[in-house]
Image 1: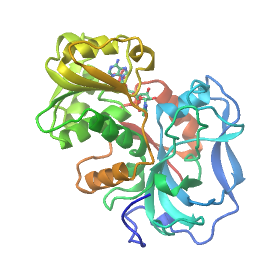
Image 2: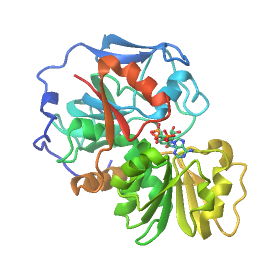
Image 3: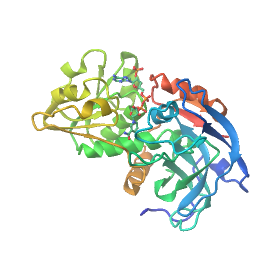
Amino acid sequence: AAGRGRGVRKVPKGFERGLVEGIPTTMKALMLKEFSDDLSGVELQEIKTPSPAKGEVLVRVLASSVNPIDFKGMKGYLQNQFPIPSFPALTGFDVAGVVVAVGDGVTRLQVGNAVWASLPTQQGGKPLVMGAYAQYAVIPEAKVGLAPSNLNPLELASMPVVAITGLQALQSLGVKQGDKVLVVGGSGGTGSCAIQIAKRLGAHVTTTCSKKNMDFCKSLGADECIDYHEHWEDQATDVDGVYDCIGETGICSKSNKVLKDGGKFVSIAAWADFFQHKWERGVSGTMLQMDSTNAKTLETLQDMFENGEIKAATTKVFKLENIVDALKEGAKGHTVGKIVIEID
Ligand SMILES: NC(=O)c1ccc[n+]([C@@H]2O[C@H](COP(=O)([O-])OP(=O)(O)OC[C@H]3O[C@@H](n4cnc5c(N)ncnc54)[C@H](OP(=O)(O)O)[C@@H]3O)[C@@H](O)[C@H]2O)c1
């Protein structure tokens, strides 16, 4: 990948414990043994520490976080999009940590770099590449960004999936200064990050959320909040772009109603609704699958973090030992901000 930052920089605060002497032969990792609705099919195991292959780095993972793709995958709901190649499988996507070894052909990163990454593959139908819920993870160099200087591992680990997705979604809407953007679902992981990125891009931001979460969304910069239980499609008007983080029933026709002529819609979750819908009045829509191998995205986000334009919206921290409780909490569907996993 193209990119900045050859050479070892001083690691940001909190990353020092990733500067390890020697790599242990085994590590703790959360393994998916079988699909299960109650998440009884995942187990923390002691397994062989992986080695980086050509073009990969080995990262001592200091923190990770919960994304719906994690628990949906463990339940077996994503087999059409991202088949699990074999069991037991590694799990987890978001990584904040330190590079401890590099494979052949790695040119940009070095041992001692504090980094962040999101592990999902970018294309549907390919097997999932996972392994963030572990003490060590091998990651293709192209997916790895240098850590910003001002976030600790717990803060940075809340970002990869939601920030990469949010920036790419809002860029696909072509958001510019003064645009009216509606973030559907501002209180969750993707929405809480999107509110901040949309503000940074100069938008006037309206979001849908529960009444109880309005103060939280406003603290992230939302200009207006609409209770999603009270027909938001009758309240928002003249919107330039809708970023849908929820995929609720009827999302496309509701969005079509609130968008201006020629407005744009992007969704990361409306897979059921989207392909049935016919857009009207020049409105257009897309479904977005995040691309975690986009160097430009990683660099733009690094700058936004360092400028203090995106803050972590972490509301709960669990230890790796209690990760199944964290996943169960996430699966309830009421996460505010992000649930983060601290990995000793
Ligand atoms: N395509 C991609 O690349 C991509 C990337 C990332 C995520 N995703 C998908 O995007 C979705 C969201 O992810 P996430 O991390 O943001 O999930 P999340 O953090 O688990 O979202 C939970 C939040 O959603 C709110 N919510 C639920 N129903 C709502 C509704 N109808 N309107 C407004 N808010 C509502 C909940 O608030 P209440 O408690 O008030 O209901 C809660 O705060 C998931 O389906 C995920 O799989 C896709």
